[in-house]
Amino acid sequence: MSFESLGLRAELLRAIAAQGHTCPTPIQAQSIPQILAGHDLLAGAQTGTGKTAAFALPLLQRLAETPRAHTHPRALILTPTRELAAQVSERVQAYGQHLPLRSAVIFGGVGMQPQVDRLRQGVDILVATPGRLLDHVGRGSVDLSRVAILVLDEADRMLDMGFIHDIRRVLARLPKQRQNLLFSATYSDEIRRLADGLLVQPKQVEVARRNTPVEIIEQSAHLVDKARKRDLLAHLFHREDWRQVLVFTRTKAGANRLAEHLGREGITAAAIHGNKSQSARTRALDDFKRGSVRALVATDIAARGLDIVDLPQVVNFELPNVAEDYVHRIGRTGRAGAGGAAVSLVSHDERGLLGGIERLLRRQITLHPVSGFEPSAEPPETPADPSLRRGARPPRRDSSKPAAIGAVTVARRRGGPERRRVGSGSSSV
Image 1 (cartoon, one colour):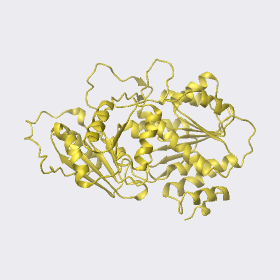
Image 2: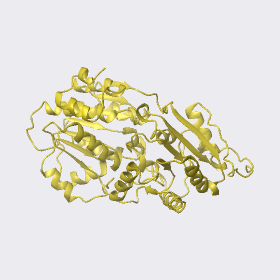
Image 3: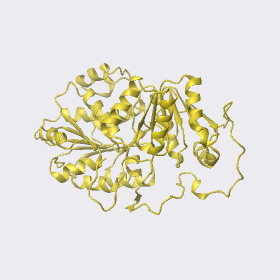
């Protein structure tokens, strides 16, 4: 199948060719005709499958076929994180470079006024994170009453981050007659409820089984004492001559400490998390893509949606508390059919977390020590912790409790950069 066979305009085909794309991916081949036909869509696709082009290309075509009658946004793309918003905006601009359409991106962490000025000029396509979008709505700097196409990108992560309330506030500002496109890596009960209330007679496409990692990713794990993890990671960098590695930690402070340690070991490293300014996060990501930084140390939410072409290596410095997050982490490599490897450093206290991951994947990840970093004797086994069941979170260390919003619970992760405070005014992502 070719892009020409999907019925795309010549201007889009020129832009696609300039990007080096020759054949549509499965999600593109299935989604583009349905969106061009005007259907609502529920699409299941992991990151790295080409899903941005799957909605951006037909969205651009549909807008280009309708004359602009006003300056308000005609298409709205909601994303969960700043990085993903920026990347989606870049793709929209690249694909639409030969069309007379205007786009803008708004997210938190940067000044409001430049965004206000850009919106006043008029836009056809608006890419936004929920918090900052509602800030603009509250100021009256954006009018959503003419939106004809709505895209919820990575809807599962938006719900996981507690944005359901914000999404509902945005939906209340949109016209009732519109086309809705929902893209999600997983189909939880919350996603089903959101889809049932949002989509009208939707077409459904799915190109990956729920929570299935790309099969070609090589997965391995090293058993090591927790106190020696940093030294082992530096050893692996030198032994394997790693040049581009995305390293996951649980907390922002842990990401900073690990990046500093790697730097002392002669390994260029940068940390990316919610306490970093947007300019610092963008600079770190650009340095990593260029190769001037070998290790990008990130928390889970900060790394969500990162689009790094041909990333060869992912390291779980600490295993995630939720088994499904392991799938999202290792999915940073092995994108769009490319090869990749994922290594986990596992301490004795994380054996239960590893078991939950293995049950989710329905496969065993063999643990083996690295010479010179053999772990000490395993401590006596403690009674099984029910919180380590698949998909469950361990008990929280503080007394705060997550606040339920409708059917979705706000996840306040210690390492998460974009926290939502229930009962406060709108906040930015």
